[in-house]
View 1 (spheres, rainbow, N blue to C red):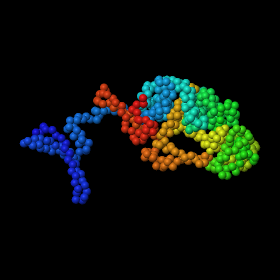
View 2 (view 1 turned 120 degrees about the horizontal axis):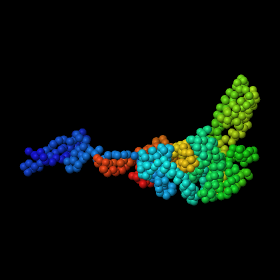
View 3 (view 1 turned 30 degrees about the horizontal axis):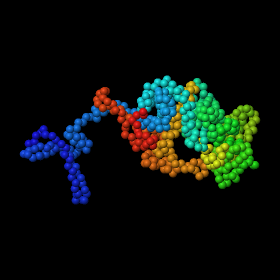
View 4 (view 1 turned 45 degrees about the vertical axis):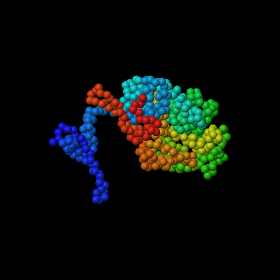
Length: 588
């Protein structure tokens, strides 16, 4: 009989044969066996049949019998903490590639906090108090060494950053607005506003709200970008600052602070007015691309003027000239789609105005509304709400009110629907008419930046800070975050619904159209690499699921702890590849 103390092992037998039905079959048997010698011969005893066990358990038994020791997983490694890592790591990688840490200033506590505030504004915008609470739950604060930053330190870092704004913007402007990066020397500028909480901010004032927040104090800020819409500088103004005033300030800054000349300023018709054009002439060294206002267009379209509808019989744009604009080129454009939309909107507003004015007529006739003053107030509210006063002839007495549409005025305005005229000093050899139109329409990219800063990505509004320096620092942080977002959106375009190859329009006046590739991404919700297509914000959220866990090996507090990254998903891995970076274990 064999000795019961002899070693056992796992024996695997495989059989392969073809049955009568012609189907090949494979059978695998796992046996727990003991080998022994009897009468000088080696014999085997089957102790148990393991074939019914899971494959991984059979391998554990095999390895254990071969002398390998195993312990329970909980005893081998304990996850002491797991924190979101991928989103802050990706934004930090982009910031590092752009040289942003060095751009902010010399290494130190203030720079680390300022950099953390900018990255946090991209990943999870919020108030400064909310940010300092949020970043301790990610790897951002731990890796940058700001987890213990107090509120006073955060405010001190903001003050430090505000003091370096001019130096930082000067470098950005020199990189993106000067030299070969901007051969046409174009600079785009536009103004926006955001409301302010509290009553103590010296910059807060009531003015024209671009956010539709009537009756609330606000600040205004002007964004300077390169031709592609990349933010390079921002200026904060009191909330009642007019567009032309802000434009004069940025031009002076470009000349005196950034030391640039021979620049072509691109702004809308409400900003680069005739008075501002005269200032630019007197200042010297500046050109412009802007548009004429409606009265100036009407003057050009007079019976003896150069702007006649016959210009648009064959094409939608034509270059004209006029003695009132010496040294300038005028490019007249007609957009049929815009003309149809303006006609539809005007008819709808006239119909709504008619309904309300008819009610006032009935009230005056019934004696419920008496007095020219009271009737005038009611009428003024109606025509002010719909902005249709120019299209009505009104007759108000103490006891009656009548009205009629001014058909002459309506017809005259309708004749110019969809027509706009761009004025520029750029010579024809440097920029043809189609390029002039495209340059003016590129202001839409600044509007896109404002949407990103205010709502979509960075949540600049509302403003909670009280002191002027902190408000300017808050807006500057948002501008630097927008600079990061601009580059991230460009890099991650293959993973998002962004149109990577928007075709150049054959007609520069017509609305832009998406490429077939963008339509395909939108329809299939997948990229050309067969990865899920997503929005920029959703991609950041997906990257946040890439965590870094602290694993403690052993069963006591003195056992070593090793930080370990989760396995990236294909989308996460591709996102870092598009940034030309590997997934880092730590940010520094």
